[in-house]
Length: 175
Image (cartoon, rainbow, N blue to C red; front, side, top):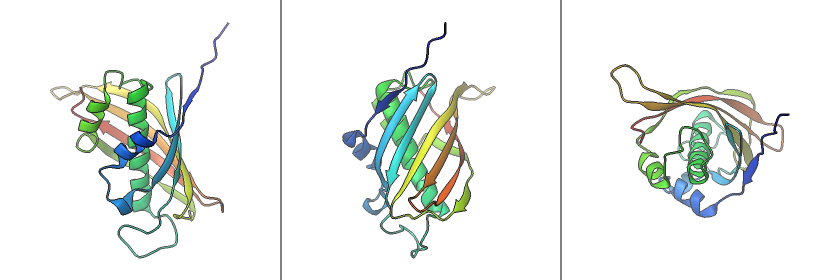
């Protein structure tokens, strides 16, 4: 007999969200809410975003690649922080939230980021989700160990706008 994996769900932790977004300028805080789900070897988040005004360019009328990347970062930081807090992701089981805060900006690197834009997404109100597909510890010959993570993400809006892609992360200087 096989046992089914129990999936847990975690509503938005507003205190954690505020702390995760603390490094961002006020007009660049796009993430409004994030519900994290976790099961056997899986962690994902479903989020709501709003970009009242682009932080760097005149209004294009649609979500652009720079904003996709910023939204991804915020979504990913929240998912990692919540995973550390709740002990959800393999590879981070020895991390504390203090470790996460120390590593958040200098040591979490996007090694590869791809995107496919299918239909324009309204930046004023859109949803997104991301999932960790794998997290592995790597130790290159003569190098320091790091965590290598494969992720996927997607965004959509109420009018059928959609885009998505994949990102590879490197967590360097890991505890």
